[in-house]
Amino acid sequence: MNFIILAAGIGSRLRPLTEGRPKCCIKINQNSIIRMLLSQINENFNSANIIIVTGYKDVYLKNHVKSKFNNIKFVHNSDYESTNNMYSAWLAVPKLNEDDNVVIVNADCIFEDKIFEILAKTKETTILTDKSFFDEESMKAKIKDNHVVGMSKAFTNAEDIIVSLDMYMFTRNDFNKLVLIFDSYIEKGEITKWTEVAINDLAYKNKNMIKNKDIKKSFWYEIDTLEDLRKARNKWNVM
Image (cartoon, rainbow, N blue to C red; front, top):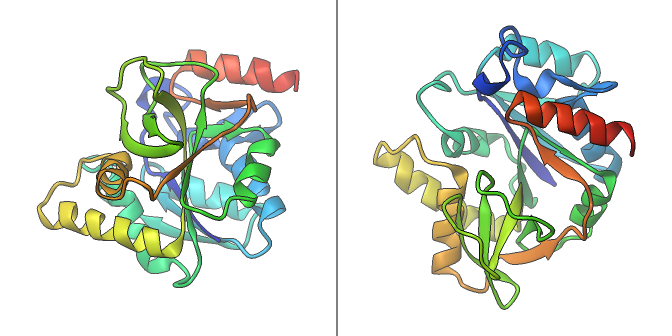
């Protein structure tokens, strides 16, 4: 399995903790967000090809990762201040193993181990979702007949709208179609789009391609703010 970990962002809402380091290097109790993620990948996938796309404080991130893991590839997005994560994902494409499936995941999320067990059993193009709550700030998926037919943060609360975990698994053939969409945006100079804009396009063009899989109340947390960090640390401490 290929893994693209998107870690180029500045994490401005977590200042002052991110003044000297990327937010994925902040600790959740005993370990950092990125080290937790890498450990879970290695524990559940025997031959993972892991690519981390760096940006802000890339030297710090590389040193932090290399001190514990030696099987990681890095791609640097030198334009991280003027681009978004679709561009970062696009930069990682040349580092992928050609025939393997691809997972895209954001580096600012923590996940319960059960979620990686679910991911490891997933064979079709799938977006992991959590129907246990609705959050206006989260990325959401629009669902029809258990397939994803759209993605947007702007979706309002409705029966067919479910929060996404920012973890996406693509078969290699389907990922190649996604890359063509990446290419079309980049060629037009549209480098500030979210990855999910391309996934939305893919879902719209291929109504039965992307499956939805609920994580069955397993714990996860996206960490954007100091309050998010406090809640995540409290929750992780009692698990």
